Every structure is written in structure tokens, then in C-alpha cells.
Image (tube, rainbow, N blue to C red):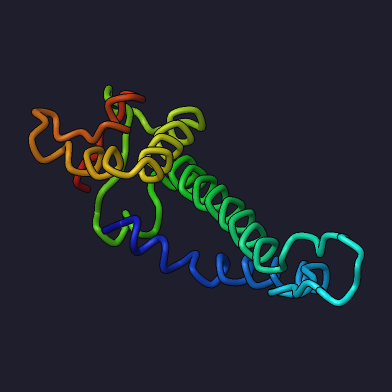
Amino acid sequence: MARILDSVILLPVTALIVGAAVVIAAPHFGPIFPTKDYSSSSSSSTGTPGFVWLELTIVAASVLAGFLYLFYDAFCTVRWGRTPGKAVLHIRPLKADGRPLGWGPALGREALYRLSAVIGIIGLLDSLWCLWDAERQCLHDKAVSTIVVQD
């Protein structure tokens, strides 16, 4: 739930990044659906269709936005001990010994969460793991020795 709240905060920034990338790159796309001129005898290729470049631009901008989310979470966690979404839910990630997270564990924790989400079923397993774990840790918490506590 905290990640959803944080995503709402960053949604306008993500839309701006993707929109700007498309607007900047659009003049260079070429025709979306190029046609082949069958009347000429030359066998020149028509190039890559514009929709391929459009898709690649959106994917690249989305990857950039993903890195923004990663650094947003790590920065907020290191600076204030939690993100605004976690503050609303009154939760805070800490090292297993109770100390605040530094840059390494904060970036590692978020990167592992993002990576597991991309992999599919592992992302679901990662998020649900805390339901049956004795320490109530998700897999990304176990990997970097962190816990999430109620404030």
C-alpha cells in the first residue's frame, strides 16, 4: 500500500518524462505504417516503422522513470527514515539490528524489490513472503537484512 501511495506522488513526474520523450523523439520516427511503392523497380527498404521507435522511446522513458522511483525511495528512506507513503501507514524500514538504513541497504532493498516485480511470479512471491515468515520479512528485506517496523 505504501508503494501505491508513493506511486501517486510520482505519477505526474512519470507522465512528464514519458510525454516529453515521445514529443522530443516523434519528429524522428518516420511514418507509423510505411508503405512500399510497388510501382518502382527498385528494391529499397522503407526503414523501421515509426511505431517501433515509438515503443522503444516509451520503454526507455519508463526505465528512466523506474530509476527515478528507485532513487526516490532510497533518498527518502536515508534522509527521513521512510517515504511519504510509509509515513501515512506509520511504518519504517530499519536494519535488522534496529539502526536506520544507509544508502547501500536502501538502494539494495528497493532495487531487489523492483527487480523481483519485473520477473513476475517472483515479485508476487516476494510481496507475499512476509505473510508466513517468522520475522514477517519479504524476500527483499531478507536479502539486505532489513525489517519493517510499525511506528
